[in-house]
Length: 130
Image 1: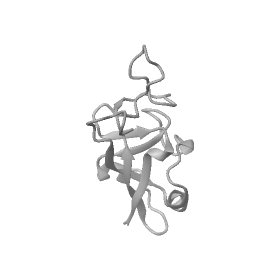
Image 2: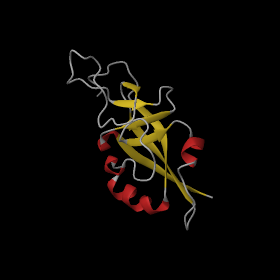
Image 3: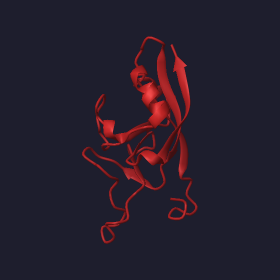
Image 4: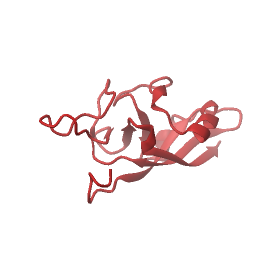
């Protein structure tokens, strides 16, 4: 991604709220796009969702037996464009080169990011709160 995106800050620290029942899996296996849409919608595509603001991800962190859970993750967003429902991969950058895709998508405002490859993110910190 660095080679393809010279001069672009590819990495962002973003937030991901989750149910307590997912914590062990995320801690051992990382984030998994196969679960896209199981608990929430897929307004910008079928991938793993991250938010720029912790307050947004807080809404996806329901109370469980030992508190609420949110991750701070390192996410490789690279070149991105606005997502849409039904995307299984990021769209192509140029229709004449359909094999060259964006790296991720967002909500159109840079507040929500969606990645489609699990290797694009790393759960750096788990925050447990009340």
